[in-house]
Image (cartoon, rainbow, N blue to C red; front, side):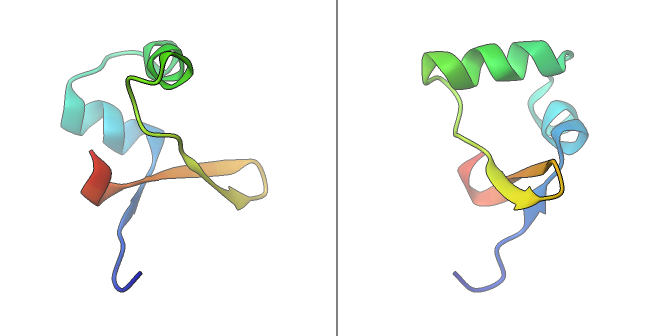
Length: 51
């Protein structure tokens, strides 16, 4: 996976217009949003190309 940019939750919120982390997690659980990647240390990211 060359040059895959990983976004933080706040970056995803800014790009999508979603105003709440809770809304993002609800959409993930419903399958309406891509599952994040656990990069360790309690940190997660979402691939930019998926958004």
